[in-house]
Amino acid sequence: MKKKVLGISVGIALVAILIIGLIVFQKQANEKKKIETAQTELAKIEKDTAKDGVTYKKVASLSDKEEDFLSKEIKLETIQEYKKELQKKQEKIVKIKEVQTSEAKIKAAEKNVQQLQEKLILVNEKLAIQTDVNRFFITGEKAIQGNEVKDQLPISANLTKDRISKVTELVEKNEQFKGKWKEAINSIIKNANSQVEQIDQINKLLNDVFEGNVPKTSVKQSDYDTLSKEIEKVKNNDLKTTFNAKLVLLKAVIDASNQLDALTRQKEAAEQEVAKAVEKAKAQATQQSSEQDKLLAGYSDDQIEYARVWLTMIGVKPTELRVRKESAGSPINPYDVGGATYPAEVTVLYGAISAEGQIVYTSNHNGTINVYPVPSHWQIGAENAKNPEFVRKMTQDILDNVKVVSVDVGNPKDVKSLIELQK
Image 1: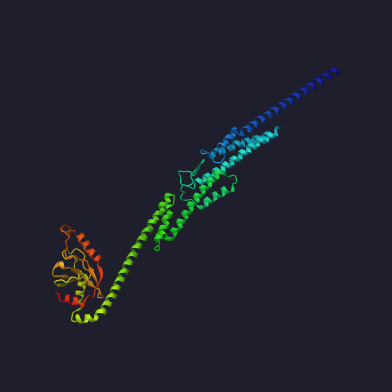
Image 2: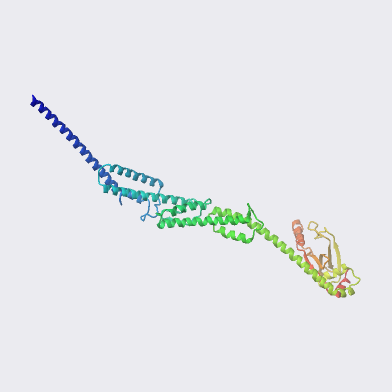
C-alpha cells in the first residue's frame, strides 16, 4: 500500500515538474520573440533615419543638397507630417528600451531621430521666416522661393519698420541660420527697409509742405523738385500714384504763386519806369524852363502838351495838327459800339491827312502819357465785322496793351512851330 501511494506521489511530482518546465520554456520563447521583434523594429528605425534611409530622404527633400535653401514645393503640412512620423519612431524606441537589447543600437537610433527632428525644427523656422518676408511685398510674386531670390520687389503699402524689425531679430538670434539663404534673407530685408525709409522720408517732406490735404502757400519749386525726385524712386505703383496726386496739387499752387510774382514784378517795373520818367521830365523841365518861358509864353499847357506828344510819338511835322476829345465810355471802334470802350476821356491827335498819323492817349500830368494803340484805319473785313466776339477781343486787346510813355520836353522852337499848326 505504501509503495502504491509513493508511486502516485512521484508521478504527480513529475507531471508538476513537466508543467513548470513547459511554462518556463514558453515564457523564455516569448521573451526571445519579443527581443527579436524589438531588435527588428530598432534596426528598421535606425536604417530609415540613417543617411539614405526612407525617413532621412523625406527630411532631406525639404532642403537643397547643401541643406541651405528650402525646397520650392515645401509646405507646412509636410513638415508636420514628418514631425509626427519621427515622434512615433521616438515613442517606439522608448518601448524598445523596456526590452533588453543592444544599448549601442538604441543610442544610434535615438541620435538619428534627434538629428532629423533638429533639421525639421530648422526647416520649420526657415519657412516661417520666408513666409513673413514674402508678406513684406505686394501679392503675386515671392521674394524667396527655393533658391530663387528677388530682392528688389515693391513693398506692400501697409508695411512698417516694426514688422521688419521683428523678423530681423528672429534671423539674428538663430545662430543656425547661415550660408547663402541667410545672405538672401538679409538682402530682401535690406530692400524692404530701404523702401520703408524712403516712404517715411516722402511723408515727412509732404507734411512740411501740406496743411492737411492743402498745400501751404509757402511751398517752393525746390520743395516740388525734391519730392518729385524721391517719388520717382518709389517701386509700389499704388503709393506712387497717391504721391503724384499730391505733386499735382503742389504744382498748381507753385504755378499760381509764380504768376502772381510775375505780375508783381511787372507792376514794380512799370512803377520804376514811371518814376524814372518823372525824374527825367523834371530834369528836362528845370534845364529848359528859362528858354520855354520865353518861347512858349502865352500858350496853354494843353497846346504845349499836344505839340510835345506829337513830336515824341510821330516826330514828323504834319500839315496841320488836329485835336479832338473822346469822352469816357465812348467805343474804341467808332464803327462798332459792341466792342470795348474808353475807361476815361482820351485825347486824339491826328494830321490833316490820315497818312500823317494818329495818337490816342490820356495824360498823367507828370511828363508821361498812357498811349492806346488804336489803328488809324479799322480794316477788319466784312466777315469779322459781323463777329461781335472778334470785335470785342480786338478792342479789348487795345485796352490790355496800353503803354506808359515818357514825353520828351523837346526843342522849344519845334514845339512852338507845331503849336502854330494846331486846329
